[in-house]
Amino acid sequence: MTANWPKPTHTFTLSAHNVSESLLFFESSIAHIRTSLTELELSPSYLMLTDANPGGETARRYGKAAKEANDLWPLTNGAGYQVEAARAYIEEYGSKGKHGHKIVEMLQERFGVVLGASSRPISITVPEALDRIHVLFSGVQAGIDEIDALWAALLPRVKAATETVEELQVAADRLGIVEPLIGRTRALALDLADRLTSDPLSVTAADGPALDVKVNDAITQVATARSGHDNLAKDLVRAAQLVANLRVLRSRAESARETTLEKIVEPSGLIRVPSGQIIDGPEGLASRLEKINGTGDDQEWIQRRSVLDMWLRTATKLNEQLERAEAANKGPLEKRDELRGRLQAYQAKAAGMGHAEDLELMGRFEDARSVLYTSPTDLSVAEVSLQELAARLRT
Image (cartoon, rainbow, N blue to C red; front, side, top):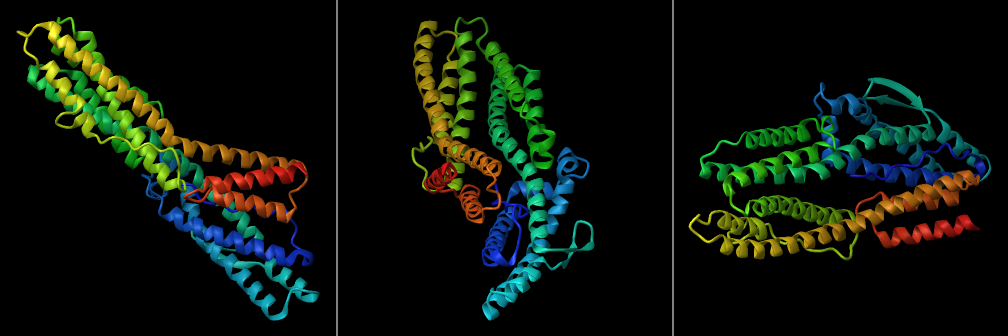
């Protein structure tokens, strides 16, 4: 989840000469903030931050930011009341002459807000409130981004690992062997699943590849025991690992498609991912591989070799298709992230060129940010906005 953060207000000076433009800017900012707050409160990763175990890494790093986020609504409502009062004054008296100065006074007048994070009242102006909101949003957003990234990278891996371990356990039971690596891998997957839902920031991105290594080690051990001294042992191990990788790829490709449909307006080029039945159905690759593995020793090895070779061609082709599907389904999100990077670069360029007080230009930046940081994102609109900003900066 990425909220539509308000832009800090300290980049321009409020005066009677720009009171109408400033009021419009404040009204727009507050409207964006309210939308962002509503989205924030629906975010699972934000709820994780607010409910984090006090002794955990998540709470240690972001507990203070999550607690301070309780001040967002009071600050927003207080600033909104002041801006609404100024708007009502304009509608009654206008904004010229002394009335403009009166509106400036109203917007710069300090109002009282009780901060829930500290249970103490403060006196603050509208610009100061919006600056404070930006700081609080940024603090909690960093935690949300970290949690979302970890969940996206690790939850599909944990799910796939759990399914593979249970399959290995069934195979080991049939063989009448006790394989310690199965128990260790299961324990690691369960531990990661528990920490991802209770204290996600105690997990690192490196834990995913480490789990993959454990799964592959267990697969190798069980497949080697099952095939014994059979000349097919090497390819049976490879095939078992390929099944595990296909589950990961299918889960990631499906997750990427669902995320893109949620985050991007009418994305193009998405690939529908085949059902899990293609791998784990009654006639899926896993079932067919199990039949190959279960072929009796009285069978000629060349027959098993022929069937396994056909299986490997099918599985390899599916692996390539799923890799292409994942890349295609992630494409719109990667395009959105590239556009966000361009927006940040343009903002830095504008500041360096001394345009920080150009309200019309700042408004265009705010519009572009609204498009890029509000879900779902319309990439066509965002790209046009950035092209217009680039043209404006060149002139």
